[in-house]
Image (tube, rainbow, N blue to C red; front, side):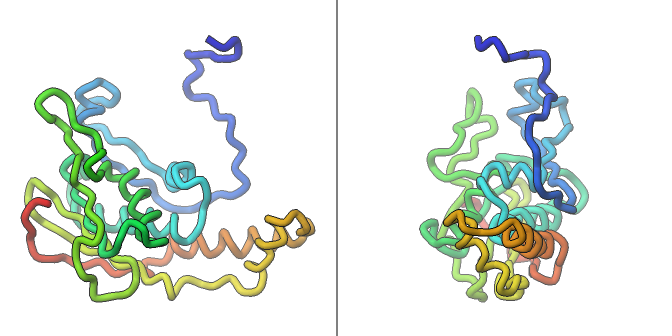
Length: 223
């Protein structure tokens, strides 16, 4: 074991975030985590937008849009109780190799646990099995914007969430500073202005419900 590893200091934070976001976390139960005594029965995992940023490796309107799609979809699907992983099925209205659907599907999977055929098989007897609960190109959406459906396998209830990406603020000319940042030619003023407008766009997605449309859909058979 490395000499600088302290297994008792599990709450130590070594990250230094350059930005803070204002958005409620997502709380989701995980029966497998409860069975294996990671969580007490009935207690949820608390998934923050910062967790999704870690999974994506960056923060952008696509990542924040995926977070909000999951947040709003789960809230509509479970209005009076906590969502439960392995009982949540996710259907994407586009293909996995699409720039938006692919990234968003992966991040929504991170939150919900829904997975394709390579997902967690569950404990003995398949308890908590999440395979084949995430499907791309699953339906034809009414909108060209990214659209996902969330379905409860226990009740058959389903909701649809559309993310109106075209309505996200564009950030203006300062967004073009990214090219100089990547090239290493940006000034500190360039970097600061870019950060201000870029994360302003992200915060707009995290705050503005009008960018999303949530509606109930007819009950569906299990995927």
